[in-house]
Image 1: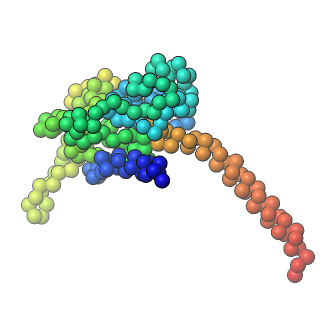
Image 2 (image 1 turned 90 degrees about the vertical axis):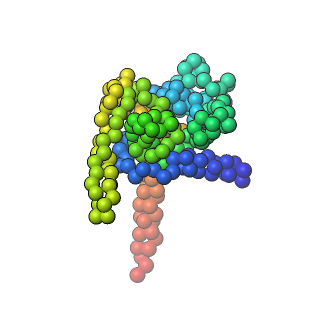
Image 3 (image 1 turned 135 degrees about the vertical axis):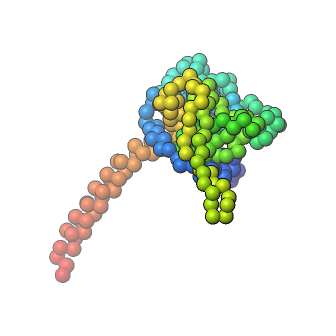
Length: 246
């Protein structure tokens, strides 16, 4: 019972933090967790840019390494920054009181974020920051207005401005609608490269949300084939047994 409660809390925590989205159009992430190269790049992106604040405390390092196709030594050398042993969980060392003081909220665990919000949501969110000097972090986000999360990928993406268009309604109130983003300061990556970076990261988040899903999908095909064969066999037997009954 206690384990089930912990899993439920983990599922609801990201949803509470990311709730009240801005109603923005969500772009298709088009992730493929069967692409091991994308998973390896995404794992590196996650531990370098996300794991400082966001844990993935329901995933073990060595399980992740086996699934994405790297050796234990490669894991230790390149991806283990917060754990001491390969079987450790992907936790973080940030103090909750410090997180509350810095961000106003404790950064949620991301183990289940791709399942609770969807890969398209996370993909669009990470690409939808825009400059807003009046904000404490200097940025806002179209998908989650007022988010406490800083734009940690700004060096890669650069800074972009949101272009708005508006009109005055019948009551005389000004209505503002998002039109497009305009790149104000280029980052280290081109927009296409940055989209690929984010897609790899979301691919990894999609994987950790259900590490067994590749095996589940692979098992599904023979199970369906068996059920189809068994159905045909049962129908043939039924016809044979009942052929003389009028």
